[in-house]
Length: 354
View 1 (cartoon, rainbow, N blue to C red):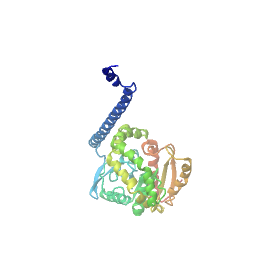
View 2: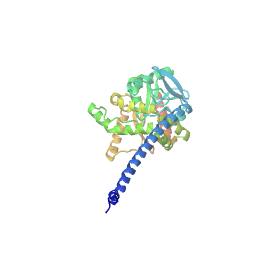
View 3: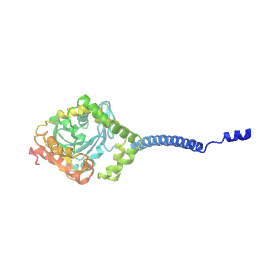
């Protein structure tokens, strides 16, 4: 064998070598391009969210009036005439527009006003937003600024039902009646610091996913369908989704749901003796993601909420879920009828019937 042939033969690769280098190269290339595509999608999502939010600000002007309260603008929509005025309080991440159906139904009977808490809907964010004490004092100041005379009837949906109980406990002579619409059940009423940290840690992943889906514009794509399924008109569903999916709304929701959760539980526990004020608690029967054991506890919990007043009753809105109880015209009418019933009981002094 010649030397040249030995050199040639020594440089012939084994059959498996090209295959090994090819697999590694392909994997690294795929990983690189996957990362590039992922970063590009994230950037596009953030840009989409920012542009869409800016367009929404221009396309959806405040439906009501803006008032200056504690140095920031608060938004309230008032319809109808007469007294007592009905004031509507939304739940977490809910704008005043959630009450569209109820306002339309109540307006022929009396004045009805739905408002946005600081950082919600068209109201500006403010330092301390989410603090339940600040929420009720700012609502009180807003009603004074808008020249709305007491006493008022308050209706609150979800967490809004907790806020209006706290308001009634703070200003008992200025509230004629309450309607709690599928209100939040804050159980346990008192967290220790350790229990709170444990609960928060268990929910941090969910909040992270909500943050990411909001900042990337995914919530903006999903929410119109949710509002439509609850019974809101298509145009209103788009507007509700636009208000629901801003970063401002996310920040406000986090402040209300997490930053001041212990204070909210404690203030709620202090607002469980409301005298003999007319109170109706309405409950959605559908869409409950509960275990059988937890579902069995609901009747007692619902009765407990009604017992916060000596003139309180608890009723089911059969077929409604947490969103459709306001969005569906038929279910909303039951909310409206309950508000009118509370007004009548406040005016006549008669007891509510179960």
